[in-house]
Image (tube, rainbow, N blue to C red; front, side):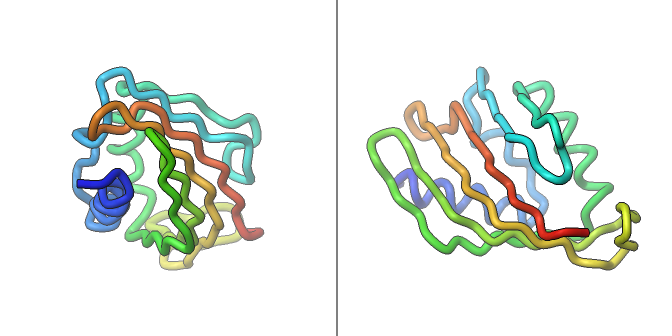
Length: 127
């Protein structure tokens, strides 16, 4: 399977609220650069991603990933994505059931067929 197809399957698994940890290598590092939700950004390991995955199930009712572009080059896949998430809890000016929207640029670096590094540049619409 091409790495682009793996990224598409990974994002679809998130939408379907499936466990995505098998998409990662054991030494995964995911970086989320500063944004409206995380002003100082975040760096996550496998243990952090496990915890975040469990928390996220309670924060979002659903989320979708619309891929606008996807480029494969060697071990790297770059995506431009429109993300939409329906909240399960209140967040700032939003209430449960409201939809958040953001544009993401995400860079995935692979080792074999698994994601070893992920860098997210998330640009949220004001909320």
